[in-house]
Amino acid sequence: MAKEWILNSAMNRFQLNFKRNVGAVSDEIRKCAPKSRGDWKQYYFTEVRSKEHIEELGRKRHIKITEVISAEVENITEDDCIEYMYKMVIDRTYDGYTTEIKTIYGQLQEMLGVKIEPAPDEWDRLYNVDFFIKINDKYIGLQIKPASGVSHIPQIFKEYSLQAKTHKKFTEKFGGKVFYIISIKKGDKKTISNKEVIDEIKSEIDKLKP
Image 1: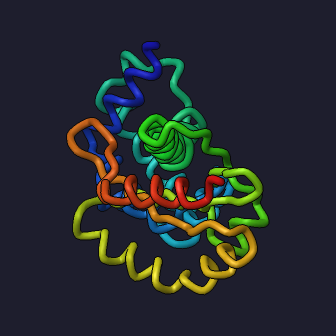
Image 2 (image 1 turned 180 degrees about the horizontal axis):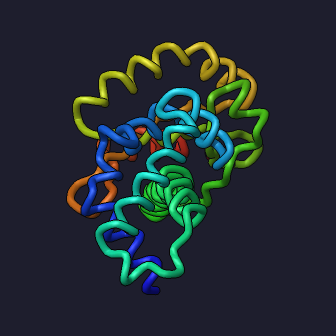
């Protein structure tokens, strides 16, 4: 616990977790929309900051700790600092992202009163669908899109228009429409921004029922 506290304190004190050092990780992971931790890791080290840069931040923190609060860090190593940087920019950002998806997923399932299931990887590639609702022998497609704020929503709808052809193919094959669910953060809570989509999905469910 002491090591974690020292690492975290040094991170905040010397502002190593500020945007200028590690990038706008919350915005970047939404741009990436990773399907796995590996996707996010590759994107981060390619598009945001280099692996060498993160390692250098870890080394910088090690110097700060050993020079400023050396009496408290006898068992802190350079590897500890580098590993902590990895965990912050990769693991914790990804975990926060997936938690947001699950939170919205749970809200949506409760509002609709139906079972929502993860889509096969093939559906993601071919139709840009993350989740589905099965109604008899037909399927409704869902895509949850986290937005960093209201200003990001127009970009999401631009993506939606670009994916319209794949969504049309989904409807032709499986009978149901594909819907976008936009997630935004209000305070500490994740919420569905385009709430009108709930009634649209309900209407589609009713239409597909016998």
